[in-house]
Every structure is written in C-alpha cells, then in structure tokens.
Image (cartoon, rainbow, N blue to C red):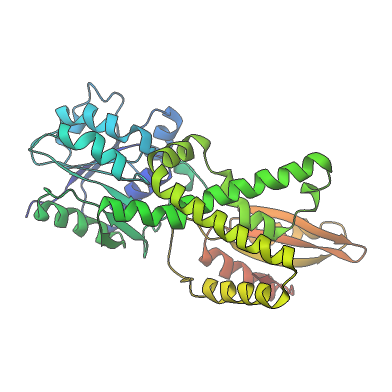
Length: 368
C-alpha cells in the first residue's frame, strides 16, 4: 500500500496547525507544507513547527504537485471552490480531504468535477479548542476524538484505509458514515446548540435593553450555556446555510419542547414540571464526560482569596512560576473578607496541576 509521506495543509488555523503538529509528533510524514490567506497565521505555523515550508501562492507553488495528501482546513463555504482550484496541480494518486462541518452540499457541488485519478475523502474531526488560530494548536487535539469520514460511493476502499491509518496514528477514533447521516447528527449535537445559545443571548439581550443591569448580573451558568455563541459569524453562517434542512427540522422540535414547557408554566403544574426537569437531568447524565467533542470543554477552578494587598497577584504568580497557563480569570464575588476567583485552563492536565499546587500552598480550590 502506498504511504503518505508529504502533506499540504491549506488553512493553518487551529485544526490545520494542530494536524501539522500531530503528524510531526506521531507519524512518519517527511514534509508538511502550508498555505493560508493570513500571512501572520502562516508565519506562526512555521514558527511553532506545524509546517516545514510555506506555500506562498497556490497557482505557482510546486509543493502541491509533490503532496500525497492535501488537507483543506478551511471554512465549509470555500471547500468546493478550493478543490476545483487545486486538483489540476495534484499528481495522480493523491488524496484530498477536508475538515468541513457539513458534508452533503459540498459533495453535491464537487462530485461531478473530480478528477478520476485523485481521491476526495470528505472528513470532519469532532474536536476543537477555546483558542482559535495556530496559537491554539495542540498536537494532542485529536487524541480520543471522533474523526468522521464520509467517502463517496465510488471511493476506493484502499485509499480510505490509507487515510484511516494515518489518522489513527494521531490518536483519532475513526467513524465512517454517509454524508446524510453525518449532517443529521452534527445538526443535533453542534448546530442546534449553537443556534439555541445565540437565541438565548439574543433573548436576554432584549431584557438588557429594558434594564442595563441584566448582563452585569449574569453568572457562570449563563456564560457556560452561551459561550459557543461567540463563534465566528462567517463560519456559522456557512454552516447553517449548508445544512439548513436538518437544522430546520431540529428547530421545530426545539420549538415544540419550549411550547410544552410554556404550557406547564401557564398551568402551574408542579408535578409534571418536576418530572420533566428530572427526566432531562437524568438524560444529561448519560452524555459521556471524557470524550473530546465539537464543543470544547472548560477546565475551571473556583478559589476564595482574602481581602488583602496582592492576594490576586500571589495566585497568578504561583501558577505562572509553575508554567501553568491561565486561559481566563474572573472575579465573581467580592466581600469584606475576600472574594471568589474563577480561573479557566486550556487542558485537564493544567487544571489538575493547578489544583495540586494551590492545595499545597494552603488554598481550598473547588473544581467545577
């Protein structure tokens, strides 16, 4: 079986750069080249070692013609156009894959235009991180993460196995399904949650128009429930429009559930309302806790500190000296005797290290 030795990554943001780092760390890939419209992203990808060479121009570079695998790590709206643009430059036998969040529309746009001597394998890594761009790149981003492949009916199985072998080496759990099945599932577990989070922020925003103290009083629960609403508007516009049919079906289900809840509130039916919340609570507990997914987890600790000079500085210095990176920090409550900090970390390892360090220093950290 042919080996994949040279890879070209178009789009060196979070996913593209993370793939480059993972390939360098866990596989025998000999050369990774990269292209991005953002020159700063491209320079940073080279600096952190996600790529070995920069592709300055897709039209004139010979690096594409040497690639065994081309990865399109770009927004879904640009994938079909990029395939048309790059495939004339590729050598026979090469593979094109992508990381697009929806599959059906892209496949329908491009399947009749594909060269017969190259293989297009649509894909979607079900993982992410809070920090976008190559500055958030992580060689372990794909470890224990579902990596969905939706090959076309005519795709050679040996070519699929070649890509599967490579992706397993970076720790991915491979799941092969049809484009339709994929789009229906991600509409439920990713696209509807984003639409719901945006609608929640929009709804509370109307209340804030009437009383400007509303957002000032929002607590951590509201932030957690709505943090995905801060996703890139261009990306999410592309996703929603390219997967509108299954999203619309789920919105109707969501509206029906909201109407059921509204009726219980109007009726003041305590027992049925309790039963509904209890059933949902138990259903929520069935969601796997350890698996990486599309909506990145947060790793946070809550810490009470005394009201004295440099109390906050002592905590941040303690973590900084131990090389534990703080992603976000928030003062939640302030009292005469002290206050509560919410400290967010990028990884579970950083959270655990911070907890041990803080306990050793005499603090009483509370893990969410």
